[in-house]
Length: 199
Image (cartoon, rainbow, N blue to C red; front, side, top):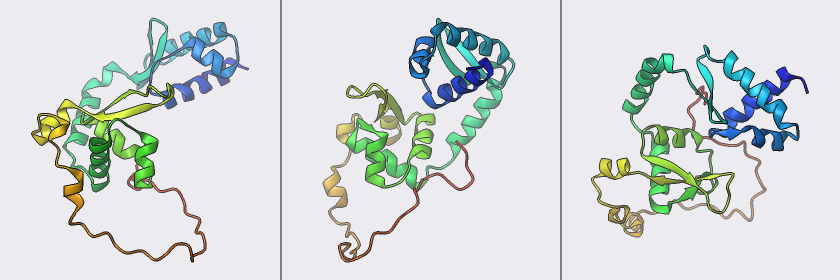
């Protein structure tokens, strides 16, 4: 494998991961020599030092991050996003996490029936939820609410949340026709992300 191709692959894996990775992690996944991965990562660190997205090397743990030179611009952008009103979809995701925490992304999407990445991203940015390690699967995370969430709602603990059963006891769900008599319908994957927004 050529170093240029390996560099592109490592960049994709780093972007997809969202967490620090070591050279041995890449070597195991790609089934190549660790020394080749280390050399390529070292070159990437040097090449990207003036890019908007840099590659950080923290004692052998590598992660993509925004360039500190542009911290003011990034801060202003994030503050603008924080000032935006929560969408109905984001509030829905937050409610699911609040009542079912800790909960995985897959479980949230199974409840909602749509991709929830956009809402999760905004809730993480706002500090209303946080990721924690999944004890049953080291490859994934669980989501839970934060102290910031409690402060926003004026709660002492999540135990002070209204009982879910009482919240929905007066809500009448719409009647749906029996599905058994209907032919299966192929649907395209749904997402809660606004049209034209890139993650």
